[in-house]
Length: 375
Image (cartoon, rainbow, N blue to C red; front, side, top):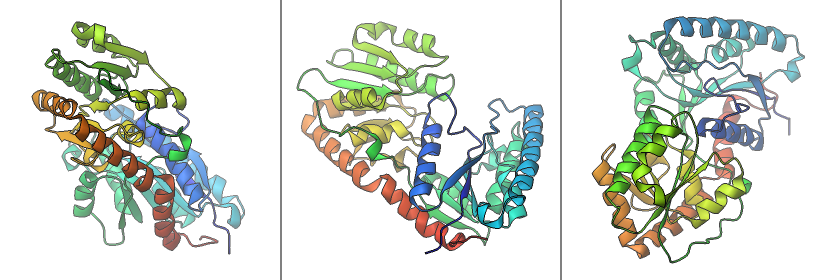
């Protein structure tokens, strides 16, 4: 059987080598492993980050020019290689208006290789606003992609609406590498319910989620519970202030990079709680479920693609503090229901959302685009 040519990998939002942990970095690293397991050895093509958080046209112009220069460099580099050493496809992870891909389409066209995106999202309302140039870059990339791996049902709606005739849309629901984690044996006791949150501490949506959580728990102050919070960032002082009235029941662990340390907290938790304001989907939600810890989360974005409402956790009305509080209270009042959700959660992630399943989807889809030997 002929060997496959390498896949050029690029993550314009956040490089897999970025020093700060996040769901985006985690998924970028997972996709690299998955491509390798699927038989498409990945090579990180560029670490140029095109993220513009503020909507600054000058910044976007600069990032586009840097991207065009990087594309020219890569084209010259690859064309100087023997044919067999050139990439057989280009694979970009996470394209949207704040982090467009101006590199991949140009390199793919120059090398005459397939251009593939995983987790692309369209946002028509950004066409005329402060991110207009980033929106244009993202839309152009999505229009040119031969295939888009769709990670959430929410993303699929807009992708279907604007899909060009040549493009394949392939479901690739969020997944994790179960083998990277310690054995998910349960260590839960029968004492005070332990709640857990794992999330970065940033201004904006993360802070909004922490605010909902603090207010929802304040409404449950008459109940027994404790909360472990894993995360750090510039908004930590404000978040600690939000939980000040509950300080005796809340433990801040800061950033935890060690999987064994984080696994210990997942094992001990009875319930993972996160309002998930504007969350794309949330890798921590999958991680918790692997350890049999059910989830209460706000039904934002693609969260429904990683938490099965009523089967592995509960999804509550987005942004509604009372509904979130009621969801937590309901499960704490029904421990048998809580345990049943946890059992199904562990099976869901372990059997359906593992690296092998993801690799199978990639292999089947990419094999038709980039056969052995490549272009």
